[in-house]
Image (tube, rainbow, N blue to C red; front, side, top):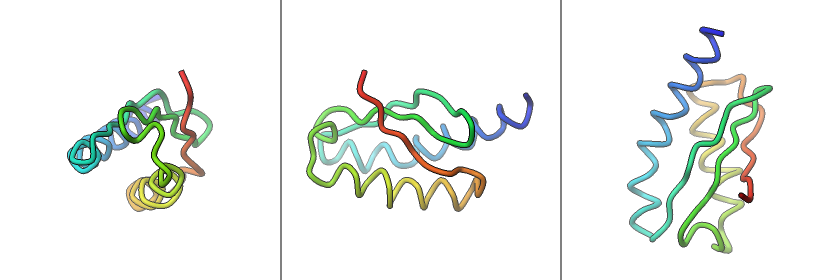
Length: 80
């Protein structure tokens, strides 16, 4: 369980670093959970209906997360 907590802490720190860039474009990101090596997030604001949302999640965020936590298999943008 401690390892999962450590990974979640890293994920949250990385999201906080990315947040200002998303906010500049009127968007935001909400961390939902980390489970089975997948990060669950919710893109909000302008990011929720942006044409480049998939690129942001599957390329930008995934690469950033995997650079710190290589065991992350993917990011799932959830609709709440």
